[in-house]
Length: 372
Ligand SMILES: *Cc1c(COP(=O)(O)O)cnc(C)c1O
Image (cartoon, rainbow, N blue to C red):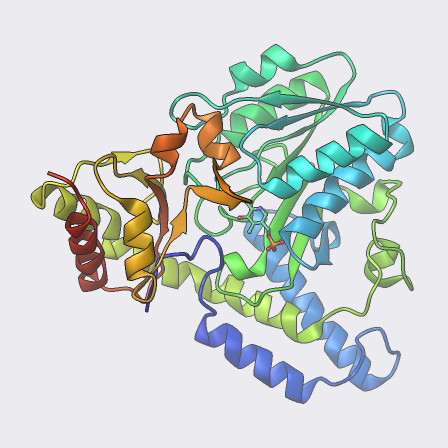
């Protein structure tokens, strides 16, 4: 099977797997324990924390380990509105193309915590602009959440410009960087970020571990989402998952080389050139990066392609079946796509162990199911 769904989960890097196995074997202790073995495990965790902090220009004390980007998004948004400083500023702005979990947290805060939520929509290129944000800001806006790289379109939002606007207005900024981490440059100071969410399994690390950056965390009066026995300085309860964390660290160290290798393969232009020479009409949705993009094939029977090549190619669709009805994803709807086109849309995401021949086979299958 040829895997074209690294945006859902990137294949585990061999270095991350090695580290996972080594740590499970060599560090049985609870990293919170006061004995030598506990201290050794805690030291490994601090090394990983430093690697992650360095990669985004943060301090290690500003990094909190979580179970993944979903939990990081929960912690950032909920803690922000639970904090006494936000008592009189209850307006949250999110983009309409955020990951489902950000929409779910915003809905929850609206229902239970007296928070007003405004949505900003991307332009036709799939990009959320500072101008669109400026139009919805209110006097009581206290937090803006705009993702860095969209997980369905592969489009990047101008977080630095959005950050400058937020800074000017005294508004805090969160970005979900699960997809952009180590693919696009990130610096929390240049981007004026107050919160940032990361996930290990989007960069070749293990599932079930992530991190959230919280600016000046120690100076803040932050309420945890998971209350516990004081881990992560009281911010996130639960025994720290030493092997997952050190393996996350290994992924941070080794993903950049894997990603450079992937970029050098130029698989996207390879695929698009093949489709052109095979006479398959297509449209790319949004200004996407090379390793992740959304493609609509207007003359192709995409549902048949998925059905009949399901054992050969692992592909993500632009729509999801809810009961009987096929529904376009909220992201495709946000860029104005009609349902009949969403049904012919695929999200393709590459990883570094693919070869051009894998892409040729996909292009040929696409051509096979295309009407002429
Ligand atoms: C994958 C993903 C998430 C969820 O991350 P988990 O670590 O699986 O919880 C959130 N946001 C974006 C943009 C993602 O791509």
